[in-house]
Length: 181
Image (cartoon, rainbow, N blue to C red; front, top):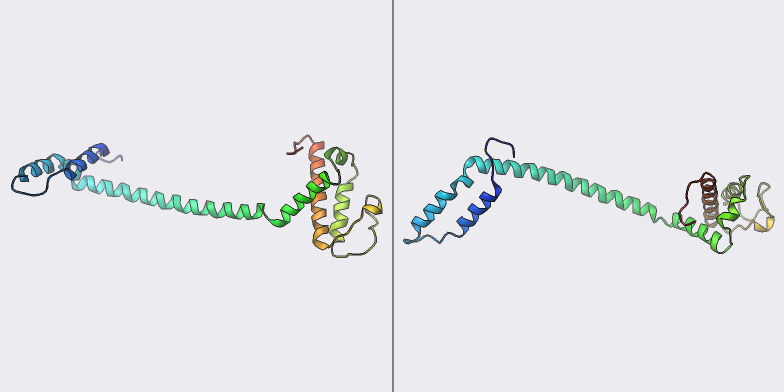
């Protein structure tokens, strides 16, 4: 508070306590009450009250601004959480994990691919996801025995996991660390 009157918050608190401690009105207490009121008057001048009200107004506006920002941040967090825990994303990550833990396609194994095999396999699953039951695509990079269509959604999940494997391989080749490896 950088106005002409300096407000001593502790003094105001002390004066409020003194006024609260005043005895009730009565024939024997009136003089003591008047003395207390007179001693504490400095904390209750119109100028001090006006300055305090102005500061409260500023703080209230700041609080509302902060409250609005908090609400916006909470909404954004909820949006990001909804995206992060999207079932499709979780299914792709689970498939990538399955490929590694069940099929044994380790990062070291994937590092051996140098001719976009992982990306090509992903493309095959993605392109043919809605064309179930056809023969192995001509550009399938591996033995036809590994072409295993499983339905549109499942094939797209496989495609996503294969793309993730290719991105991880590229990152490893570039020296970019991949968590969990």
